[in-house]
Image 1 (cartoon, rainbow, N blue to C red):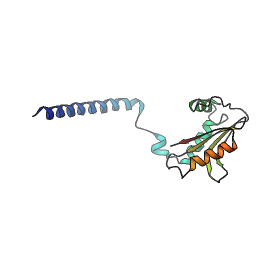
Image 2: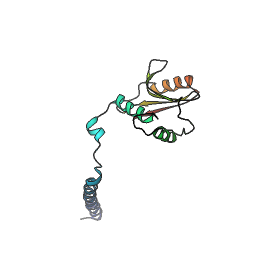
Image 3: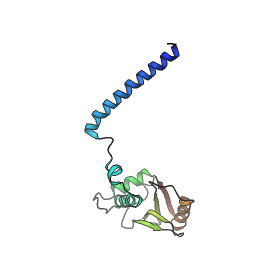
Image 4: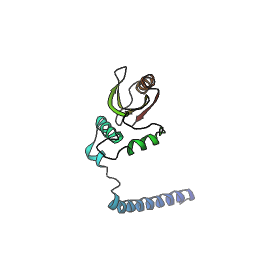
Length: 151
């Protein structure tokens, strides 16, 4: 066997060994963590509206989770808007209708005319100019706004 063929054979033998070792390690790990299992993805199969319902509840400081503002505070920190304060003037609206009849999946309004819009797109592409239209609407309606699109 020529040197190049030998190197290729060695490479694939080592690769096969590493793959087999990885599968054995994964099997041991899965006994404790079930890393391949995702109950939501595999069994519940939520649609866009249901995911928005979950997000709305988590981001609502008075949501059924009973954790107060911990989720919305961490969300605001993650998106770089820790300056926004969640209080009695805050509100989360599902399916907010903008000026052009488009519906924004979630609108989080804060004291002082600021807001964050969230468009939830787990299973679909944005419609033509959708995010641009939302941004324009939010910038006209709110002084400090931010638009986010999830996918």
